[in-house]
Image (cartoon, rainbow, N blue to C red):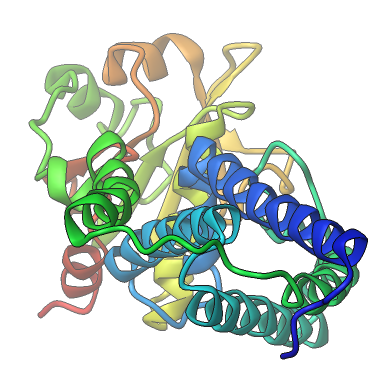
Length: 310
């Protein structure tokens, strides 16, 4: 693209370029601040595995930071311009697919802090694309940094994203069974609080969740997408939530809180079993705990193999 010749046009294009760079970096930072939600959002499309979604979320953030830095620095202009153009076009195509698929929730383009629907984000990207086309008319700086200057600048955002918030599967392995086994077994007895839930028969994913808990909600979303992606039996997922009035276990009256059937468990029993920790997820076979998870270490492959008896 031909660069502008008049000084006002060159200055305007340069300002537009720096504004675009700042926007890319801001978008990346907002995604990073709510990276758990961003991971689950990517995973919700049932295309990538849970582990791949964690990796993809961080690569997108690192790419946005690098493109933003390139736009602001105004060096390697042609390469950076092509990368920015491809990213905006790619995001827009994805958002169009999301809209046609019926998704209307927050697209996570600006993280969880600023909610934007896919349609709104498509309009945003259209404005950014116009601004980018205009910014392409700016002149690059007459500066060619040596490799020992630009290489650390490129590696820093990538390392930061993967070190400051490393993927959960890098840090968290199988959890220790930090629950009250004695109280849990008493609750599963014929006269116990869990009688009638079915957790003592067959193979189940049993989740102790609390309505209003953000990580419980995301654990529910992870489990739901694991079930959908691997075509698992929905009846194998049993949720237990604390009852406010302390009455005996019964189906929850609120079916909108989580995406699987939930039983209300007396709050005292809930607290004694979990030691107050939540979310807590168990793989159970005939009333015996085979594996336990918290939000961070939910393992898609292990849950799938367990329920499919592999």
